[in-house]
Length: 281
Image 1 (cartoon, rainbow, N blue to C red):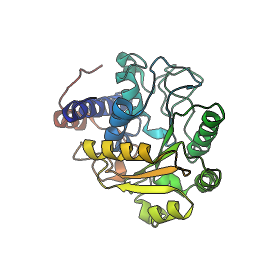
Image 2: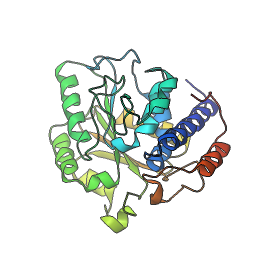
Image 3: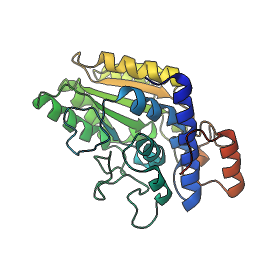
Image 4: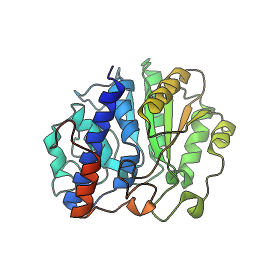
């Protein structure tokens, strides 16, 4: 197990990767990526029972689906830095013929990715299918997903939420990145979600909140709790309260950075706030 300091250092390097990738091609989604850096760091370094010697079936290991695929920079960084592909490949982000497109794809045989994600709302349905498959095969490992809060405005999500509870898909852990920011403004202004805890509970899920989703120890404890709650007849939902653009002061809390690249000066500021810890690509 890594120490909190080691996980914090990993997270800092992931932030550097994110802003450098988006800046290099003047395209991408830094805000949500930065806000979930702690989540991905803890998931892949501490919680997920996974194998970087990737196979699509995911037999005898936990598997993860990113439903809000636009935050691909954070996922690519963590996949590279946990051994799925060379860190140097991060320099190809969003370039022609690169495997690292703006939204994760499967046709390029990208290690670690089992679903093309772009159209929001679909990831939970795919994850339920994978969870069913594990149960039928006698595989006791878990299926994890991540969803944006704005994504929960999609109707398909709630069909899947109802199905997962109704069919007792209890090897499924869904995390909601609740930063209250989406491309057109705050979630509350675009389409309020109301009491998410009450809604998931009413649908038959086991639900809990992590109030500081940008604190390594809180995220670690939350994911451990989610894992302990699996297998009890209900799917599990962890509502992770994060801040858009976390770790870069001029991006924090602003939906303007949902999909916007930093200027040269802004990049330098972001890098100064996040000193190199593991080596840049």
